[in-house]
Image (cartoon, helix red, strand yellow):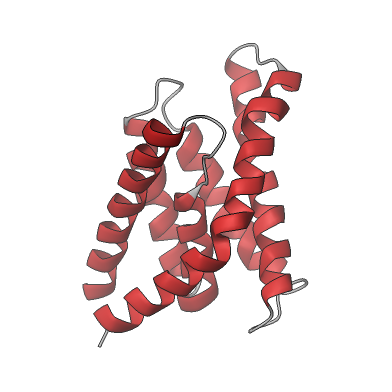
Length: 161
């Protein structure tokens, strides 16, 4: 129960931080902190906590999103399962480069799943999506991932004692 409360609070804080960063900096610096949270809980606590985090993050993001409800929820759950699958093959505990490769793959999968679902419900310009969504999200998420993982690890260790 304590871990579930920690996950809910961290999900809400990451969502608020994403919102503030987007409103202060703008479109060109938008790391996907909720996705990093899903990856973190999968790597450090396992798939069950990662799925719970993905559902919480997806519901929260879909509640405040103007597009079709459920797209973020589905994409985060797919990413949680893909982290479990990919960490067997490309992740080595303690290796920062393998963690960056894992984050790169998962962010790419998240954007692809989002846009496959959006294309199903309406027209999406793929070229503009790559220019305005994939490139900024991918680069900024990779840039902040090491710091986010380090701070999340410290935070979870302090709260779980």
